[in-house]
Image 1 (cartoon, one colour):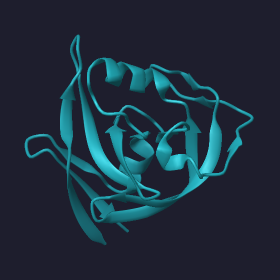
Image 2 (cartoon, rainbow, N blue to C red; image 1 turned 90 degrees about the vertical axis):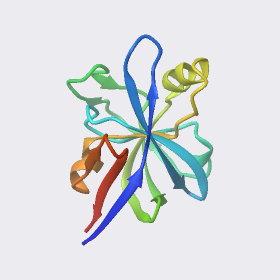
Image 3 (cartoon, rainbow, N blue to C red; image 1 turned 45 degrees about the vertical axis):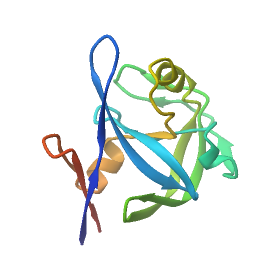
Image 4 (spheres, rainbow, N blue to C red; image 1 turned 180 degrees about the horizontal axis):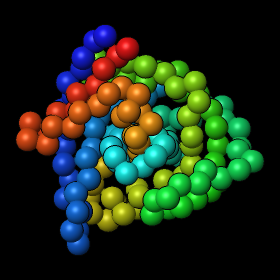
Length: 143
């Protein structure tokens, strides 16, 4: 088991609140990801340059959750072969894709970087993540 310590950035959101952003390399495209501990599933932006060559299939059902967005619509399912955060490398045999225009439009209006996806609890739990806000470090394990 290898432990990875990855720096992150905290972005203040107008009107209150904060978001955690982390840099990644997805399919050889430098990308930003939002870390959301309240999101059940990781979701990736169908319109991101990082996924322009990905083959996805439209899902026949919506994913239900108990969060703010109780159903994620316009879902596509696919794989991500090349995914790295710093020296942590992995792939996703099963990844969920949907347009994240609503988030990226909000970020654009606040001069924040475009995101290619949201890392949710599925990923954080799988990799035994620890978020250290004082040091601004995401610690994850490669099993």
